[in-house]
Amino acid sequence: MFPKYDVIVVGAGHAGCEAAASAANMGSKVLLVTMNMQTIAQMSCNPAMGGVAKGQIVREIDALGGQSGIISDRTMIQFRMLNRSKGPAMWSPRCQSDRMLFAMEWRQILEETPNVDFWQDTVRELLIRDGRVVGVKTSLGLEIESRAVVLTNGTFLNGLIHIGEKNFGGGRTGEKAATGITEQLVTLGFEAGRMKTGTPPRVDGRSLNYDLMEEQPGDENPGKFSYTDTPVLTKQRSCWITYTNETVHDVLKTGFDKSPMFSGRIKGLGPRYCPSVEDKINRFADKDRHQIFVEPEGWNTVEVYVNGFSTSLPEDIQYKALKEIPGFENVRMFRPGYAIEYDFFPPTQLKLTLETQLIENLYFAGQINGTTGYEEAACQGLMAGMNAHLKINEQAPLMLKRSEAYIGVLIDDLINKGTDEPYRMFTSRAEYRTLLRQDNADIRLTEKSHALGLADEARVKKVREKITQTEELVQELMQIKVLPEDVNGQLETYQTSLIKDRTSLFQLLKRPQLSIREIRELNPQVSNWMSRLSDDAIEQGEIHIKYDSYIEKERLMVEKMSRMEDLGIVPNFNYDKVPALSFEGREKLKKARPQTIGQASRISGVSPSDISVLMIHLGR
Image 1 (cartoon, one colour):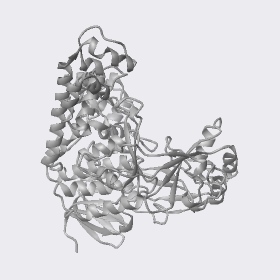
Image 2 (spheres, one colour; image 1 turned 180 degrees about the horizontal axis):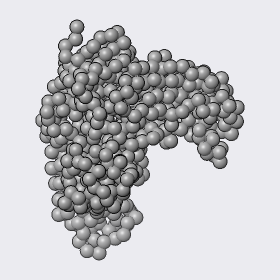
Image 3 (cartoon, rainbow, N blue to C red; image 1 turned 180 degrees about the vertical axis):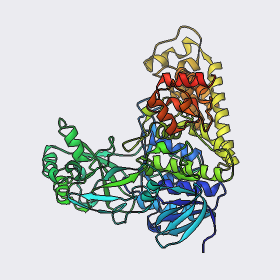
Image 4 (cartoon, rainbow, N blue to C red; image 1 turned 90 degrees about the horizontal axis):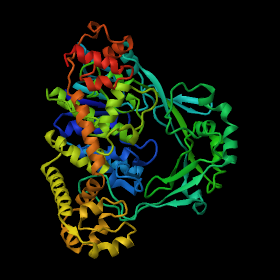
């Protein structure tokens, strides 16, 4: 009935979709197995993509040839560039998405990918032969063979949904849990754990009084995620902000005795940075209010997502508390919020390619690795799909360094440090964030994508033109110099210090009071010349000039650290033959099997003295 596939992807969430698309676009014959063809790429939680650090990941996915940025651009209803008041390393694109259009667009793209087949079923078991995965077995008893398997099970592995004192099996509301895989993997020697996440109630937007809320419109000149020619928004829908209050908190507290989180019925750890509303009230007892974001779920629906009100309290308590929020006095609830517990596998059991250490050609991506968030899942799926294709075709894997991408930071953190709570990306996790900006993801990663056959010549040409134009702009501003008598009057109006000698526009642009717009006003000659440059190149040039010293400092740090990254460790190195290693360091190194000294240095429990001993033993 089935041919032998190159790659089978289990699960069609954000990780599964990117895995299937990347492997197929590289040339693999892919089977995407999902429990429900109607929920491909469903936004189970908030209808949004991007945000702080997450927006950088979406742009990196796009630069690598993934689809999330393109689909986000085609289905967004609002765009905002967050942190504009801060430096460019913090600028983070975020969009509000049309939830239904997002899923439809993903399914359409996958259906238009010739190498992707679909099968609606539940995978119960992996087919393992001689330590290698060779296919899957479904609930219908079908055995489907493949050369590699990517597991992207999300919250479905033994998923348990909690609402107050009620709980029932499910991977998402209205959908059953997946069983069998965890149990099999544990018998094969894998370590498993439990995590939890939650979601807020959805409400009827027609029942809300927006006059009592603060409007949050999109950017006046909206941007986008993809470096391709995707559409730019011409109209947008606003989001809204309101707040809880002490009355809301008092109502919620009446249900704390029935809370599965406080009663101990939930064993898994939840996301620290996206806590439930009852957790916020409990942990931040000194706060008399918490922010609520009221987010529309699409262009043509009245359904509204109540961001900031994630909860697993009984539905009647949820409803009573909602009615006390300003603007929610007459609220009608579509469905209550809930918490969900699910199995995950500590990611220290993986290689940097996301292949498991125990079973060859088996890859994990997404929440199965202990992460949370669409963007974190999608980038793992992309990398797992790429590396599965490369492995079965005996090609070198793609492993991004921490200095190359937020995706590299995420995977390096997971593999070397592990996580005991849902892992979410932040800019603070990246030590080279001045280099890893959202504006230069194309420059950092498109050539890599092109080498793998994902980015076409047109994309590479566009990136090279951007680099050339940026360099031209920087050089031109260094060459053009202005006299005090010509510009001091304008400098005074810009509230910046006057110049005493001929000064280059390059030096003037370094001043925090001046942007490229003021520089163009100072010198019509350069303004006319710049009119032929792309907006991206102009932005890139301005950032390079203003933050030149910071960028150079990070480059030097990267060069210093890369010396350790390049010091390889043989795959079967015997750490027991290095007696000077600490006991904890030896055990952690034996478990993680790092490929380089740099990777070994980031493993939790491996001390600097362990690294020194190891380097001496290796003759370095």
